[in-house]
Length: 184
Image 1: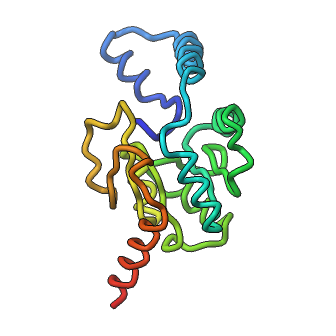
Image 2: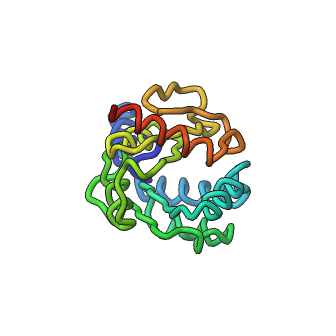
């Protein structure tokens, strides 16, 4: 479920089936949301993120966000790190009918930027995110997070441990070379 809806019904249903009793879903949501916000407040920008964004800007690239979370959640965190103004497009759960692993979010971003999938690179940290990017036709770099780092993500075109391991110009060249090779 990681990288998909931010509060899917499935886990509640599974837990109710397992326990054999109905749950106070709203109380669980409230408690989970409060704890999530506490944990997020202690988070910092991951290593390499600012460098890759700066390099992307230097190269004249349009940066965007495709998130299965709701817009308020996404924008509040981008504002907290003073990153909101860095993105030309932000597409969230409210903008599409289906979130990741469906390709809708990436397709919405591509449409908003007026570019083709072959002109974009996705950076993802979950299997559902990688699946969404690949289904939309994007080259996808997986950067597993502490929760997903032990799960294989074979669908990704490349897997790195950190954005510090990404040299954007080299990646763009590699993607362009692969695109040229696949058309010959």
